Image 1: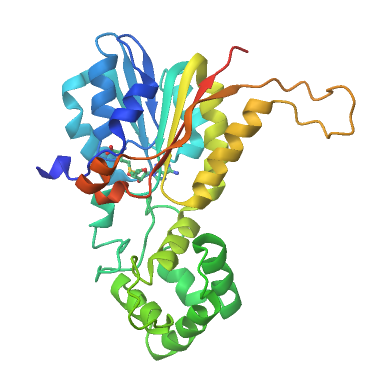
Image 2: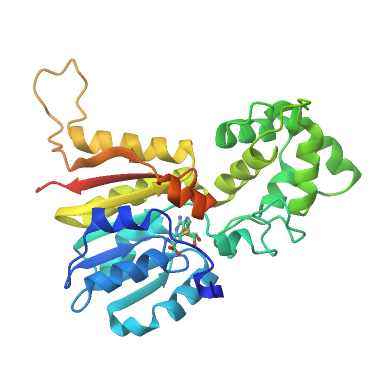
Length: 316
Ligand SMILES: C[S@@+](CC[C@H](N)C(=O)[O-])C[C@H]1O[C@@H](n2cnc3c(N)ncnc32)[C@H](O)[C@@H]1O
C-alpha cells in the first residue's frame, strides 16, 4: 500500500451498488478524503460523467488532487465544509446530480497526523480540527471550559458514563500543567477512568472523550442536517443519497432525517388536513442500516463501527 492509498475506503462495494454510477452521471463526494470512494465512482461515471469532491481539510484536497489527476476535467475539488454544499455545488456546475456520498468522520491520514492529535498516541498539539483555519483547537476547550461544561461536553458528544469524574480530573491536572497533547489528555483520562481488574475494555478509556472533543471543535452534529438537506435538494429524481457514519449520534441524525423526508408532512397530528404542503422527498433503499461484512472488518478494523444508510430521491 503506498501513501496515497493509506486510507482504505469503507463499504466501497456497498456504496458502489447503491450509487450505481453510470457513464455520464454527475456525482458528489462531500467528504472526498484520500479519494478512495471517488476513484471508484469516477471509474464508473466516466466517460462523460463528473465528480465534485469536497473536504474541509486542505491536506485531503491536495491528496485527492494527486490521486484523481488522471480524470482531468471530470473532477472538480473544493476545500469547503459540506455545510456550504448548497452554494458550492451550483457554483462548481453541479446543479442537479445523480448521487451524493457522505463518508463521515476522519481518515486514517488524519488519525496519523501528529500535528492535530486526533489520536491518543499523538505527541503533537491537541487540535482535532478538520479545517485548521476555522474555529478553535481542542486544547482551547480543555483549557477554558469549567468542570461542569467539560462534563456536559463529554456526556453529550461522547456519551461518556464517567463524564463528571473525567472533567474533575482534567480541571485538577491542568492546574499542574496545561493539557496540550493527545498523549497527555489520554493519560489524564485513563488515570481518572474507574479500573475494572480482570475486565479489559475493548476500546481505549479515552475514546469517548476524544470523540466528544472532535465533534465539538468541528461542530459535527450541527453541520450534518444542513448538508443532508442541501444534498437532497441537489438530487435528481431517483438519485441516491449514501451516508456512512461511525458513531451513534451521527447515525441517529441520518436515520431521523431519512424518516422525516420519507414522511414529508410536518403538520401536528391534531391538524385534520395537511397545511404544510411538504411532500416526501426520500425513500429508504435496502437494510437500514447496512453494516460491513466480517471479511471487511477483519481486513480493515476501522470499518468496524460503520453504518451505511441509502435513500432514493422521489420525484418532486
Ligand atoms: C472518512 S474520511 C473520507 C475518506 C474517503 N471516503 C476516502 O475514501 O478516502 C472523512 C473526510 O471527511 C472530511 N470531513 C469531515 N467533516 C467534514 C465537513 N463538515 N465538511 C467537509 N469535509 C469534512 C474529513 O476531513 C475527512 O477527510
